[in-house]
Amino acid sequence: MQLFHGYIKDDRFHLHEHEINHCVRVLRKQVGDTIHFITGNGPLYQGHIQFASKQMVSGNFELIEERFGNFNYDLTVAIAPTKQMDRMEWFVEKAVEMGITRIIPILCDHSERRILKPGRLEKIALSATKQSLKGALVSISPLITFSEFIESRTSGYIAHCDLGIKQSFKDQIANQTGPITIMIGPEGDFSQKEIQWAVKKGIMPVDLGKSRLRTETAALVAVATLYQKHL
Image (cartoon, rainbow, N blue to C red; front, side, top):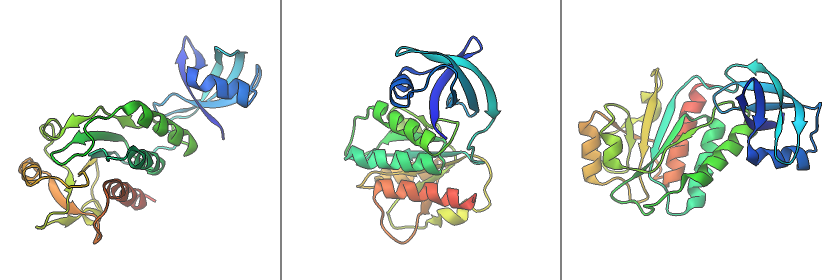
């Protein structure tokens, strides 16, 4: 199934500008053709093209599936962006494929990347959403500081490499229902101050296995752990 990204206005569907060229010039869709599209809110639609040009593709439509490709869990990963953006982009693509609700980039004491432009990540997330046949787009927040993130939390998990008592993330979520949030630090790990602050806020320290993992690998292991639970 070829999916397009569109929106609905005045009881008609319209493809977004970034989809029109691929639809008309690459795939050579024309008036009378049937296409499938998502709006990013969850449903899958089937549209029938009634107008097609280099500037606009629109037509009538019908709802096919309300919660298309939906996962029965709510997962937030708060992650310190990696120094090399291709690693962060890889994580976003694979996390979307396996099912993630939102990504919140956080600026930590040991962060190597302190500026993040979400536009590229959003494009990758959209492509992965269509490729993996999902109707809901992942929310990617602007970069915020560790303190801004932690002040709004009273539960969740923090994965760090520091010594001390930590629970198994896999065991902790085995019987958990409801939204799950896990924090993944930078290559230099969370600072002692950040770990202590998180624990005081009620966030549980966890491990993701015996190996010391890179940031993007740790984040993906967390996503995969929840994905496997729901297979």
